[in-house]
Length: 433
Image (cartoon, rainbow, N blue to C red):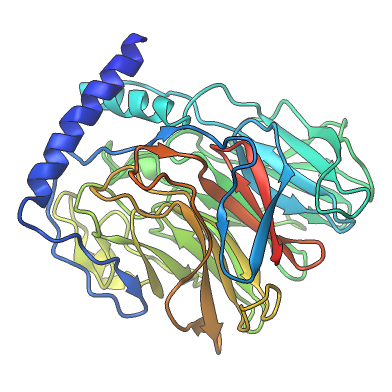
């Protein structure tokens, strides 16, 4: 056993003892969900909870559990940490494969996190590529495979506008020429905007309905601006890029780690899922799904939900006063990353419009949360009702190992849902049974 793995196991034992002490005499907290959540009182943790299942992967023939009336099959496999999925107009499926670096290790706790994340297959050498899959015989499996784009810097978000293909690398957005049916991009890309790399490294992308603008999610560098708010400049935000002028601006801020972005087509409003801060308790504060207002500020790092101040952060009362409450709580530390709109009737049994969310799963609470794909129903442009499971079974019942962890979600050909699984190293396809 390597020193890192040994240290990781020791950390897990210490973490288990700390979790047991925190839970002594207490019931498991109910998930904080919905449009009017009741959020427990914060309990700042001097030693943050650290609980992460070991990455196991799927055995041959094993797969997630689909909701009643649905079935799931393997669309693509043998990938290296697939994070995001994008479907081209000709139904070719693109999969971004990327993995964060270890980063600087400045303390024993940093080392503990790095060791734990490595055990969970959440750190390592990045493939830095986008792979294309084509289903040539319409059997629901990507049987034709090519390397679409390589030598990128942790690619994540993807968007096609006319004949230009955009990639959200961790250090900025790059544009490439694309012609319908291309299976490989070989030309040089053009850098449109620079982003600070590191920290929350993913850079999601979505084009405006008219194709004139791009929106990019750029997460914070740290948990609560631990190294000062100046270091977070340009981060914890969604950026808007004007494709005609080449200019960019911050569209909305105070979003600690806004990852998935999607349009609600009936109202034309942009929505996102956000990972909230750590170290205040299992359900404090909840991750959330929210509409995004132009110029809106959502609280990070000074406060969370309904302007609840985080006393660990040097305060700015003016910023707290302008903070907008999110629309819908998704539970604490679910790591809700993937987001896409699913029209009513796309999948059997899901008879209302709504958002599909890929919940990557927690690493920092006493009982693990997330590790599934859920659906939030919408009515009149707003969330309406509790989340419903679409895919579960990514986590072992004893929470010791994960078979997979869902990330990116998107609608695919023939009313299917595609799900990137970065621990299983596969893409799943969900359809009616």
